[in-house]
Length: 247
Image (cartoon, rainbow, N blue to C red; front, side, top):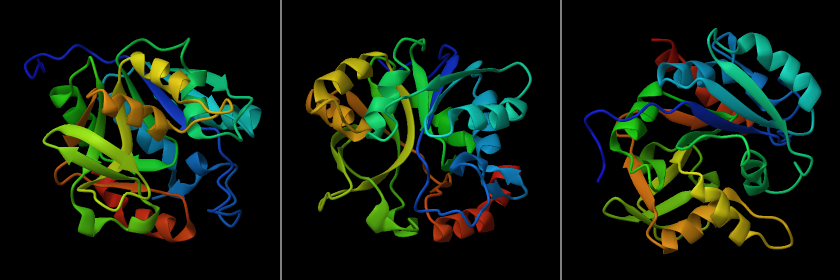
């Protein structure tokens, strides 16, 4: 049963930031997407603050291409009282499921899982804390499909009630969008290992296997805002909306 009264604290979060951000390009001058300036601050600082408000104590940052430099840039951005645990994924050129697996030996469950290039209001984490079934994977989904900035690029989700039954960018039948914000048990690592093909897999591959066994819940974010920042156009949209994250 989902406990809505007094959910236990979630102390760990995994943030994926191993990619090079090729679609965003070098025009921003930032070393990596998490450091792109939005509202006069690095994108990742908003993510750190949201996790701090949710009670997270340890941030497991999965790094890749520029791990040493990026770690040095991240350290001063971590709020006081939180700990940064940098994890280097040597196979960062592979899909993001491999980056998630890099954190398997480090986290306590349940843990938040998010992307280093996604902005989101902290209320999304609160919804996960209150509504999640902590024995399963929980994905924050956006049912405001008409508000999605780049729908073609978005990962689509099909649900039956609160249960996710399908996920993927190419779904033709869907009723929600994947925000990239999860609350997961460590069991997700087992499914990612099962999903590997030629020692590679995406996060969606693992979630798809869990969904087939009725182990993934959709948590509706309601009116909350989020934005993937993967292209110059998405960055411009995030800049317009950043005041939401400053209030």
